[in-house]
Length: 127
Image (tube, rainbow, N blue to C red; front, side):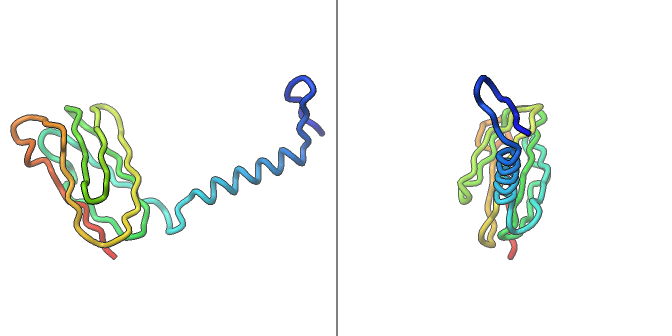
């Protein structure tokens, strides 16, 4: 059975099957090799992140899902080269796979008022 795509173009069933298998293989190879991605939900509001301490495991993929309640806060982790804005009412996602154990400070880098300097936390990566 052939599929007529447009004038003069046909794709055979075998070609469609091969394309499907290649697509599935590409999606599978893009999946993390070290296991399921860990999801951490973080809420930002003047002048705190909740939680303000995030514990991850080296080599394990993580997805940080941020929600800001009141302001376009920033999230910056200088030592991991991560920087994003967190607009209110929207979930902002950061994917990372920390490679080595350590403590990485994060902070809000969009001035959000008196108390802004205290809006910080730590990502603790364990072996």
